Amino acid sequence: MKGNQYAVIGLGRFGSSLAKELVKLGYEVLGVDINEEAVEEMSQTLTHVVVADSTDEEVLKSLGVRNFDCAVVAIGDDIQSSILTAILLKDLGVKSVVAKALSDLHGKVLEKIGVDRIIFPERDMGIRVAHQLVSPNLLDYIDLSEKYTIAELAVPKRLTGCSLKEIDPRAKYGCSVVAINKKKGVIIAPTAVDTVEERDVMVVIGTREQIDQFEHAVIR
Image (cartoon, rainbow, N blue to C red; front, side):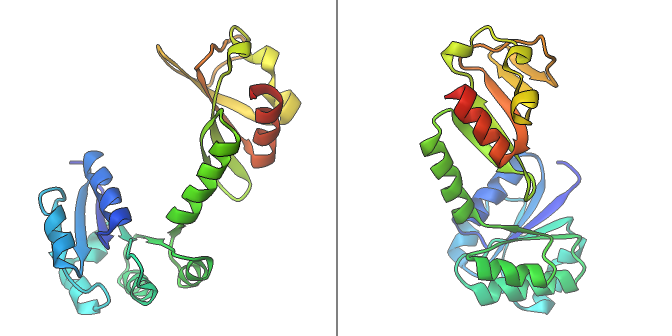
């Protein structure tokens, strides 16, 4: 097991999926839910599981959550419990508190109480799918900040054999290719002489506008 320890509070679809992946990555995970069936379902998967009310400060203290590197509030549809749990985790001194938001207003409240990272899984997935529907060569993208995005773009057949110097996304569109994923492996920080082939995947960083321009002008 790796050093970091995570507590995932709320073992619904999002929380259980997150917790399972953290375990798969080699981390210790405590799963907490008020629903006994949800806890029982994860009992053979996570490091520890507990049936508990996360809005009870004494319960959180007894679980030792303040000793965890990160606590994720993944409570499904009870906004009040989500907010109260996040407040208690911050008050108890958990190093990093991450919370799932069900709406923009919920997210604003979580931000006001000092949650370190707010996740909008349904909204973000909807946005991602919409981009993929209108841009078939856009495989995936992640917003790094309000300004910058990193995207994976599939190389079309007509660019086979072209070098990055010929494509020149930085000079023409302001975005940069930071990696090329090829069948034989990944080229990190490719140079101007590196070439691409059909079905290679270019990892591009830039503003969303720059990447959109590059994708529309070159990739489509």
